[in-house]
Length: 402
Image 1 (cartoon, one colour):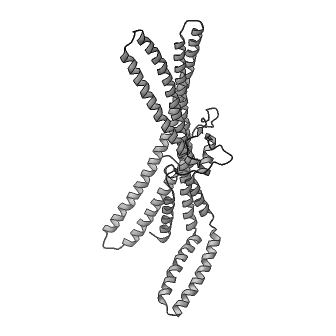
Image 2: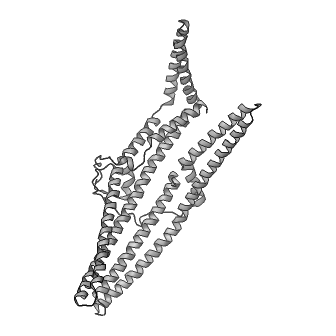
Image 3: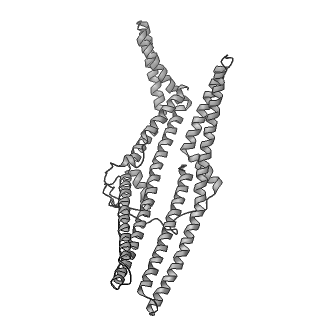
């Protein structure tokens, strides 16, 4: 591996070391919320900025981006030129003084400066640092995406809790009725105890949901740099009418996603390095008696090509999955919305019959429960569709398909 590529590999490795998991490393963050926002609430529209400005990891990554982008290559080039001249003079003096050891050390330092000097002149250092910035920016987008997924997951858990609480209220109504019927001798004690056990199980499940919601909110607070207390109100997702969405153009957007993908870009860098190694090996082994070494290098190069092809194929398959999910989830949402319309019509019928004395109040309550369940299912389907659209946008705009 040549010197320039070695420095690039070191730079990218250092960049990877600075990148840490979005949620786990944020757990100790307790910074106060900004004055412009309520630290105890967040909406979807605020989330992106709140994470970028509040997440400790995101801020570290962005400071590292700023550090790299602050480099003035013209000034660095001029500074290195002056340092090299001074070092060359000092080296010559050491040679005249007979201090060969010190002169050798200076020669190594001079050569290192010269390599960097040449890299700036050829634009290699600028390109390597641009790659580092790109990787760091990808890590920031990964953190934001993790926060978005967590936000939607928390809303789903909250809805499950609301559904469970509604179910618990239904159980309580039925349990009251069953106990009355037991007193009248119409049902057995075993039937009462069975429903009581169902109630106890439901209460336990609701407690588990409450704990899960608290955990998610703590993680969200951490990502936004707020005090970790689990006290956080999440706004509803934008409705279908409020959301901007255009019909996807698969081929064009796949191309955009591949161009934006750091994963594919890094894989291409690795492939290019492998090609350079193969070409160098081919030159080294020309005319050599030990031809098996060249045959080994050919297999290494072939493996690198196959690895790159596999990476591209995996990316395209993942993108295809995101694209296909859009139509499926949109159809599921429309079906659930149709079910809401149907259940609401049944509820109106039940309420009318009750007003006319032709139905019991229990029938009205049951119809309300069915309508509420249908509404909940439609809301859940909308969250699934919204999440699928958001994932697709992240893929197209930032190359994130995982």
